[in-house]
Length: 223
Image (cartoon, rainbow, N blue to C red; front, side, top):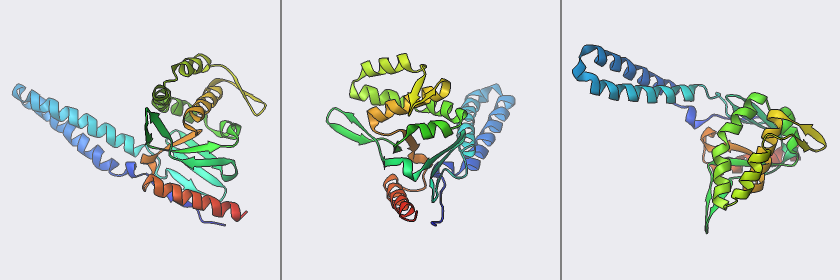
């Protein structure tokens, strides 16, 4: 059996440093405000920088220590709202999705995963994570539709977003149905159901794809 491979997000680095800089800047801002009215300008600048660095630092700190795991049984994606587990047998394809604008193609900053059976993901995903991903992926959805000029598809999707859905003979409603429709819509537009941001990786996206494909192949052969 293969040993698990742990991926730690580069984006999590320097979280404490950013937070500390932000707190110091906020303290400086308070000191400047108290000291003199003539220092309100510099105080406002310090306040703004303090807020920015503190928010960025906290955002880094709340990210999970491990973002992705490659296990003998499958791929695990850790999000601060929950975890997605995808078995190798259920993964059909992995690559970077591309958007099309005119004659130009450019890769989007995600690792896309196309599934054989979407219902396995819907049954397993925590509702809190599904809700968070619905919000986070809305810009991805809007850009994919706009770039393809398929605004009619967007209208149809938005009109049916809250409707129940049936996958593999099973009926889903609520958040599960909404996330199912989102996955199917993104798959129709970009070719993948699941999207892992590249900023949660510890290496270049293409290097990660090579690693994960080789690991998957060895895992399937070892079964």
